[in-house]
Length: 242
Length: 242
DNA sequence: CAAGCCTTAAAGATATGATTTATTGCCCGT
DNA sequence: ACGGGCAATAAATCATATCTTTAAGGCTTG
Image (cartoon, rainbow over all chains, first blue to last red; front, side):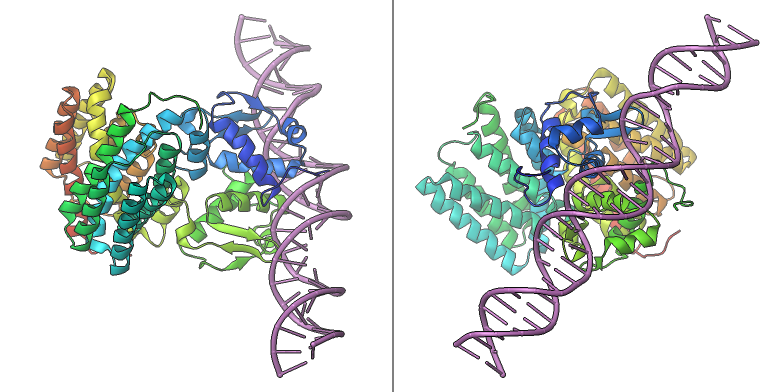
């Protein structure tokens, strides 16, 4: 049966991706009912593959499956909003604006704390990585290479979160990376990065290195404040992609 | 075949729970390899059930499955630490102390922001619920009924997070509830709640009601600071259960 | 008109066979 | 002896058929 359908890795993963993103991006309304048989036909795969897919979607809270009824699309309140895949799917679809705002506010709370913790726990290597990332940011910021700037920015924040020595905060690196990526790819960034932003990043790195938790927290707060301000002030929200 | 093991809901869920908590609580070292056949025997269920279970565990990052090799237990860095089930499993097992500390630090970042947002978005009903919860806390705090106090405390924080108007923050209610519960159930709380804590909760409620974001944030910061201090100052960390 | 039974549609579970794929180790040429 | 390719094979992956369980919705009856 299965002939084409470029399967990235497992067969069920492609189905998962397609169905999941359809639901997460609002393509299927909550309460909508699907049957396994229908899905079998729709995707041209066997029952077992569909069932595995459904189990995963169920575990993410996107659907619930009841006998004699079928597979019901769940309301948003049921979703595991922290699941990285759901975040990605939503960013790729409908509610991108709202999603970015939510994530921005989350960062607002999390990153200053991470900075303060990092000031107390960062290893010398991590301090090095931090200042290295800042230098990259400065270079590419001046040259106007947004992609490279983004990469350095992500590296900076990832390193910082990991340096916090807190697993949960470390687990948010993916989320932060998505936010930063989404932000630049959807033109919610100034064409040329704020010099002030780079300076604040440098301040964070400096404060972490010298173990000054309060200063690190303060500088980081500047960064996320600025990020929020830029996003709100700028672009209305447009649904158009690049 | 399957005869015992009263399954709460689906058959695969019981297997999921057992295997998942085994892994999450450190009962199986990272790198350990399992085979599907082995698991079939071990749990006395059919292959498809095992496969569905594995798919879910895989989607939580707890294991990875490769052909010709088997199912490999993943390193902690791969886990989806925000998955509510993983949190529960870990709190029930080995790394409870570390888990509570991580979650505490997370709260530390998130809740003050949520309070500030709530001050701007809370509906009148939510304000009412907030002050109601505070009153309950005061009553039960005086009477020394820790369970009832806990319930009111959870209600307070849940309401606040929901009132923030931010989905992601709202999605953390479960996490916060787990922390509060774990804290009192493992005697990391004073036998009689700090009067100061109750006063701060009242201040938060007051500030939210009057729309004073800065004051709400400040008062909430007091609360989480105090919580951290109590947890660190108190009990050493011991692995002993009640 | 309501309480309970019956039909039946759909998921849940099992069993089994076919297919893929990557590891392992053997064989062969250099 | 050594390294690269090739075959054997173990294990997951996918497909299919069949049976069981559950509960929704209609039907029957007091």
